[in-house]
Amino acid sequence: MRSLSEPDAAALLEVTAELSSLDDARAFPPRFLALVARLLGTDNACYCELDRHNRRAALVCSWSDGAETVLVDDPGEEREWELLASHPVCSRRLASGDWTTPHTISDFVTLRELHRLPLWNECYRPRGIEYWLDMGLPMHHGRSRVFISMDDAHDFGEREKLLLDLLEPQLEQRARVVETTAAAVDA
Image 1: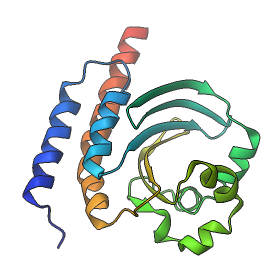
Image 2 (image 1 turned 120 degrees about the horizontal axis):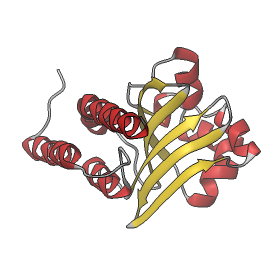
Image 3 (image 1 turned 90 degrees about the horizontal axis):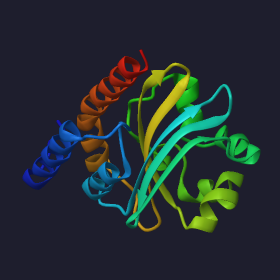
């Protein structure tokens, strides 16, 4: 049976309290992602909504080492989309349809195997990325919605997966509230 330490439980409650009090048109703004990064013990966290059919990043919000980024409707590079198909975690999510289970790259390949992939050589090696953890929300209107953390020094383990697993229902609820509010404003 998995369980949280008292400090982790307190940190998770802090993140969920902040999530419920967000006053932002975006479901997961960079300042919220900073809390997620701190919860997971890393320097970055990202939320991506990818329109896989049209091969566009509908939304990317990220926090990395104090820098906030928001991209909307970004086509990205064609080569990145090609490489994404061979991503050890992303390719399995697409094949299985399971978006909500937290996974690390190391769940599927060793570090040595990762280093043999063009994905690592072209995208991750230049940025010093060795480790990856992600967890998504259910697909919505053909979009994948995924929270991603990457690190250069340490892998993510069962602790971080448990934290994301426990946070997922609140994240899904926040996404629904923001979507409903946006639809009401548009109407």
